[in-house]
Amino acid sequence: MSLGACRLKKRILVLGVLLGTGLNLVSCGGYSSNGYKPPSGLYKRVLASQGVTSTFSFGSLVMIDGRNDSLPRVSPMSAGSSPGLMAISPTRNILAAFDASSNNVYAIDTVRETGVGNVRLPGPTSSMVFPTATGTGYAAVPTATVSGFSFIGAIDVMNFSTAALTTIAVNNAQTVIADSTGTQLLVFSNDSNSVTVLSPGLAVPPVDTSCSTAPNAVCTVVPGFDRPVNAIINGTTAYILNCGAECGGVQASVQTLDLSTFALGTPIKVNGATVGLLNGTQLYVAGNGTPTGPLCTSIASAATTAATYCGTLDILDLGTMTDPYFNNPGTEIAITDGYHDRIDMTANGQIFVGSHDCTNIGNVTIRTGKSAAVFPSTRPRTIP
Image 1 (cartoon, rainbow, N blue to C red):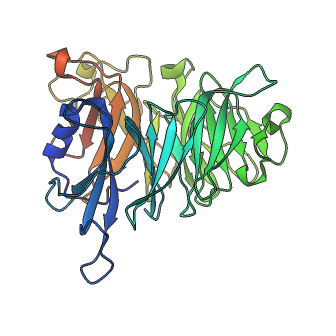
Image 2 (cartoon, one colour):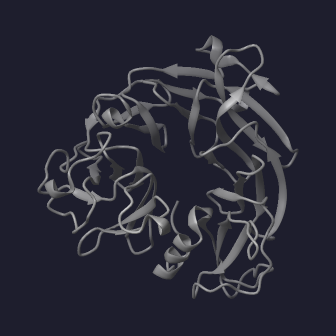
């Protein structure tokens, strides 16, 4: 999602490091001085999930003034004792935070700055999405169990207006992506060469097991990929990110999937593909491509680093369906290593790529194992 508060400065990123892995940032947008003013009185608001509870701090959602990156005198909002992962609706009226200590997802009405409610998941999640303004969300829970079935994993449909939870059993569900209407979900499972397509509106509560007898109206399993892990949906076209060798497959690539016919396109080879961002006819794709990634010294754009291996950022031309950066060390864009799972673009066109499990350099006692690469700049640079 676009970073609504474009003036966030580096000290906010440093704050994230000082607070460890418990701080995540998301913009709630802003309001015109002539329009509605939220209860906090802030025109530019950023919510940070403070997931560290200690003697001097408590887990909560903290409000930040996006105009000057300061902490205003606004009471934090409750979201359990260890909130971390957050998701926000496209209209930015609903924000949800996952509390790792209880497996609860807390929903916030960002207009009124009040809690909507919470729903408890059957296990932890690292992927959830709110595709519309209705307050219905979807979470991938890879450890969810379904009575009567040997496999584990599910997509949980969260309805905060009724506090209802509908479970759709999907084997090893790890990541969920929704179209703009929420009528179709793409589900990615670890160590699989298939993508599961769901129609959640047709699922039968409280537990739907349609995927055990797919294909049907609720569930279709589409094979023919190479360790798919993520996707970007534009209309009825999904750009599937094949992780390839990095995830135990063969070759990283981007492959189209027609969501109307389930027809597959020809894979376009890329240097790495675990996360992507669509901007017009350009598709930014980041990843390692192999379990380690290429040697940093093999990439001309790599800044001086003590790290041995780097990730890469490719820019695909969707008009010609080509990647001029693939297997071309002279043009490849080096970024930090690790598993890349976050990407966003600021209002001034800078790309931030986030990763976890990246190489620790220096004093490991103050490193979080998470980092972000920034592009473009004089040279792509890394923020640990």
